[in-house]
Length: 64
Image 1 (cartoon, rainbow, N blue to C red):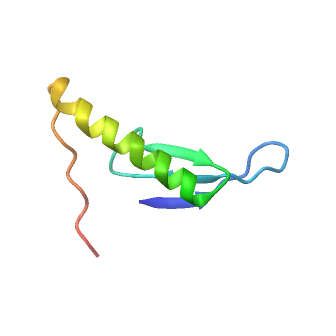
Image 2 (cartoon, one colour):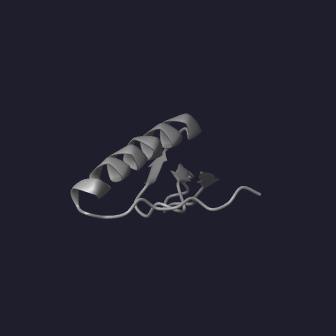
């Protein structure tokens, strides 16, 4: 998981959480915890949807 603050127009800096190996598993929120929770929800939705669409699961990158 990657978490960062991103600058938006008007001087807002929401937090963005994402799973880089899983396209579409990204979310923004004012708090880090909310961004992580939302990205995790998207991750679960994407993973559960893949078999129904005949898609393979993404392989995570090796640990450092």
